[in-house]
Image (cartoon, rainbow, N blue to C red):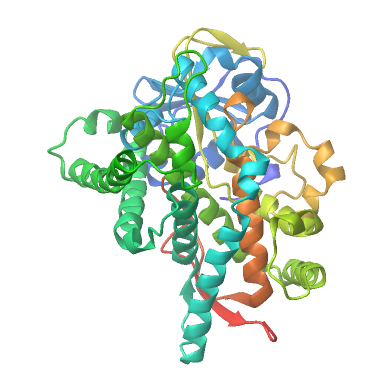
Length: 469
């Protein structure tokens, strides 16, 4: 899935949409279902920045990879583009309901206004000690393994999922949901895999309305498993209303400025499910890929360890330390460039428009692939190279803002950006301070697109305590 500049279609303003048909009436549906990243990388290399892609028969989507075009859709003329009725969001709505990620219009604006105070920098900073505390508990488990003489690899993908689930449980509910981790974690993983299969199937949006299908039955059962956990917590809080200082307490307390109306139980469920998914899996993915890249680039790891050791002198990082740990943030940003957890962005054109001089019809299905955009050779020289220096303040100032979209962009940019980056930076520095993660020789790491971008089959790595840690 490497973009080869020499194979890419000639750059320059397009006069008409390039058309990718997949060479058959079946279009690209089969390739998309198998691996959307591979398929879209090939389309970009062959056809360039603006492509009308036949998905199946007479179903087309418009594939945009030019940052100027992306800015137009996500920001400049965002009023013309919604999430529904795009098939991806119809499917995602089966899991998240009408939460911030899937809603549009007045509902989205109301919910964004109500939830915004929960994600100010000041509020998010109060969770720092909780995040490092959860990480230290994980490292204690790793150290106990080592003391028992267990030198088998740990599955870093699973460990990061468990860790971020622990953290989101505490920040969202002020409770330990790790005891639910087996049930909740399994349900998340299966929902994620089933979602990817349905998304890649041209009949996926129809299939979810057929509950008798075995795959849909499993999908619904896992969503119901997650629903049960969330509804039980909300019911308990309604019966015993105490402000415990967590995000759920804040969400239950906020009301409209006009009528003083708060969120219904169903809306609470949808927002909590959204926060669970977006605050759990994506950060875990970012850290998993970061550790993989560090193991493959020892010179970067050495510099990161030196920064951590010098700035912290053996103590655990706090939020106040983060400005003095700039390289750790740069490492995470570069890892998210190469392996964006959210590997597809989608929009629905509600009216006719023009992007880059090309006409877009009403009801156009728009697809953006951050994996491709983040490797665009016109904006990222030597794009496949892992180089955190791309994210120095000086280099960031030169970047096209929409050539880097791990959190989307425009007014729909992820509300939890500060939360996610703070969490990732604290967790990374805490692990690096005490352990060195080493690749398993001969293990081939392959990006597996499911609901988010994860390594196929997990990521086994050797966890070796650092001397003096």
